Structure formats: C-alpha cells, structure tokens
Image 1 (cartoon, rainbow, N blue to C red):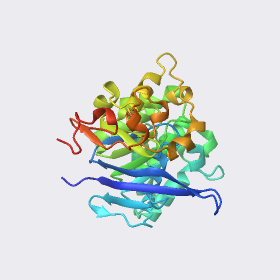
Image 2: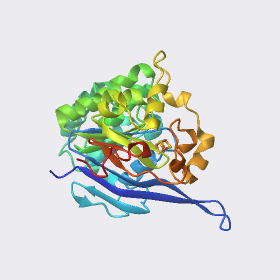
Image 3: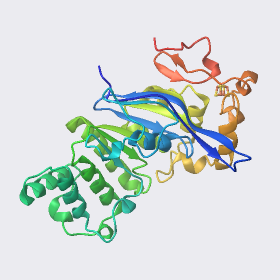
Image 4: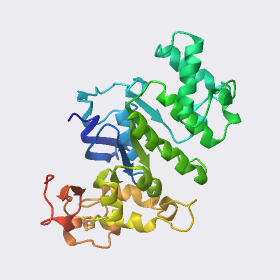
Length: 324
Ligand code: SF4
C-alpha cells in the first residue's frame, strides 16, 4: 500500500567555522522511515539529535543535502513549501509565538478560510471554525474576538491544532507541541492526536524529547542520536524492550516520581554534542556501557532484529540487514 510519507536516505550537513577551519557536521545522516495513514509516528531523542532538522526538511523549511521524500508517492521537490499545502500542517513548540499578540486569534482562522476558499459566506465560515474548535474541546463563542494573551498556553496550543485542522490535512507535523504546556495539560493535548487519528484518520509526525508522552501516544517510534536513527519499531517493542544501549539509557532516565520532569532534565549532554557528531565509528561509543573496540572504528550497520531496526554492533550475527 502507498505510504503517506516516505523518507529515504535523508541527509543534512552544515558547514561550521571559518573558511580556513571549516568542519562539516552531519546533522541528519542517511535516515529512512515511513508513515502510514492514520498513524502516529514519533521521532524522539535529546536536543541536537536531528529530529527537528528532519521535521523542517519534511515541511520544506530547509533543504536536504541529499535523500528523497515522497508524499503519497509524489516526490517532494527541493524548494517545495510543504507547510503551505492543504495536506500537511505544522504545530510548533510555543503557541504564543504562533500568533501575533496584536491580532485576534479568530482572524487567523478567517484568513485560512479565505486563502483556501473553504466557505462561501461568513455564516458558513463560522460554522466550519466552530466545528474544528469543537474537535479540540473549544467553541467559536469562547474564542471570537479574543487576543492570544487571553488564553492559557494549553488552550492556545489546542487552538493551533484546530487551525491546522481547517484544511483537513492528512499529516500534522508537531514539533515539541507540549514542551511549553503545563505538565497537567500535556496528556490532554497528546490525547487529541489520538482522537484525530481515530476519528479523522489524520497521521501525526510527533517530534519530542519526552518519552512518557511518546509512549502514550505513538504507534511506532524512532529513537535518534546524533543524526542517526539508532532504533525503530512499534512503541511497545522499542520502549518496553529496548535493544540499543542508548534507548536503554533513555528508558532508565525517565523520572517516575515527578511528572513535571522529563528525561532531558536528567541527561544534560550538550557539551558532548559537537564531539559526538564528529566521532568516527559509533557516535554513542563515548558513553556506551557495552562499547567494544570495533565500535570506535566502524560505523554500525542498520540491522533488523525481527522487525525492529537497531544500529549497533552488538546485534551483528543475530540481526539481518533487511526486515525479515
Ligand atoms: Fe555501544 Fe558499540 Fe552498540 Fe555503539 S555499536 S551502541 S558503542 S555497543
């Protein structure tokens, strides 16, 4: 069956430093994944793993260095602004920066109605806007004529989702949509993604550093580390029975007691980021408890253990290089 989204060998390199001392950082390194219709697929990893860069390329905000992206089988051209098409919509981390504080929030909705010719009259437009707001638990009456600062972060993020739904998208790309929302409201927001999947058949590419919400909401998940997908499979396979040493580290780092914390609070490794991106062999070798001599020399292959992708030398011999 045709995939809603296929990403093949996607690579993004950035040149850092001066002309004389220039170094190339491979922020996304030949990653491949697909998404089916009505599926929530998560790219998870700590800050600087390449997940947001991947989302930006899929949306057309940035150009890939190489690789292919197919939307329902159709190749995405290098400069295509996918984010302004009807079929793909984006939701960002900070709902307050999505809306101009000097504009009423409803004006964005009427603008979308006009741009995409979604209604014939103002009455029809209001009816459509109300319908989309109701799908996120709000109503037109609650929001008409109000400015962004009259809403909480959680409400405004729900309004962002309603706005994204105006064009009946097949795919929503949500980049850290709950990281600036009160911990008590996070589950309500991610629950909406499940509802959209189940009731409207919408797929969500969920970009997050928060494994707790990822586990709760995802069908499949890819764990990223320094530009690579190091493990990918169903969320139960990957998070309940993690194989890759990095996934295990993340899994153990999920705080159980305090729901306001996420594992990114406990894994603070920014200073390692640069060195790890430039590391030869396995990029996780510097902090892997299972490291072997060959890990420092050879880049591990993508191996399939059953139908779970694992990028680790430990599985040489037990894994295959293509799904069974
Ligand atoms: Fe650890 Fe080696 Fe596997 Fe990398 S390849 S995760 S260093 S065991």
